[in-house]
Length: 482
Ligand code: GLN
Image (cartoon, protein in one colour):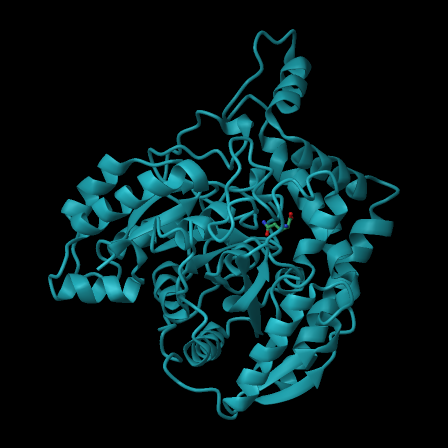
């Protein structure tokens, strides 16, 4: 049995039956990491000995007892580095656990490794990391998606059974789609962001990337819930997110938004998604044509609101309190300016400049205020749609994974990678990407993701629908060649 390719549920069976132990599992993963990492480069760092110690003491009777979980480098784990893949935080060690980490540990899981990402989660390819380029395990000449590209690549490359990522405009769902994994963005307020380095606070959510929908539900069970340390986390009674799993699609009403089948979409992606939707209909789902009329504004609205919030959030990296500081500053202003000049990469600077501009007096009403109003219209589009349907089904990404370097000089083209994922963050609803087939290019199979979107706080139903599709279609759990 290859322990490195098991799902969380299969690992739990193995632990229960005493076929293998948490230490056996961790050793198998470390071996796999040693052979895969020279090419994949998903990990910025990892502490195998610390993880091994935890595995030795793991209590497998706990919900995630002895399960190693990779962590995106934007979520703090006490005593471990946390850089958000930025030079400005090189050498920084987190002094406390994020709430999701406290909860994972309480559930018995082992946070294992720091996973690469776009700097401060700004990007769609992980190429904006200040440290390394992560490769897609399906074709190592291509990007893994982003910004949680390290999380998705590590799961696809069988280096960890699951990982945590963060999703501000698609950063969990898009890399999951491009690497053939399942990725869940919970509803806004479902999961505490205490200990998540903030990018855009009205959009950010933490969520899982795993091999199956069931595994995502298990992880959500562990991390969800009200946290007094994050005032935006919602107070909801504890829910078992696996409760909707194991059903079929009979009678499920699925909305097909016409605005999500646009010109310019990759023909192979369109074919895979259309055949997946037909599969849902054949399995008993009722397809309903819907319209989300303000979709065309989502990318523009996002790049105003996200940059505005980022410019405020990133003001704290000034060389005084965290991470790196410029050498021998002349005075305080020189310290601020050089620290930020040397510490931030060009995409991060671009966002700070854009965000400062849209918030500046004279432009605030024309950009920021107007974007907030259109955001409300986008949210209302979804509310109207969910009167008619249980979930919306559409592509996750307009393209399959693209070659490394192809879009690095074309920010606008890079921004369009999230055209189908961004609206869910603006509306605060939940969304999941599950594998739905492949496009063959240059002799390689490149995964395609199918996205289901659900009402705010309707994760149990959303996971049930995604799980029903996943089991009926059989596209999950295919093994990447690298
Ligand atoms: N790609 C989008 C961006 O660059 C979304 C990133 C994210 O979800 N963190 O902002």
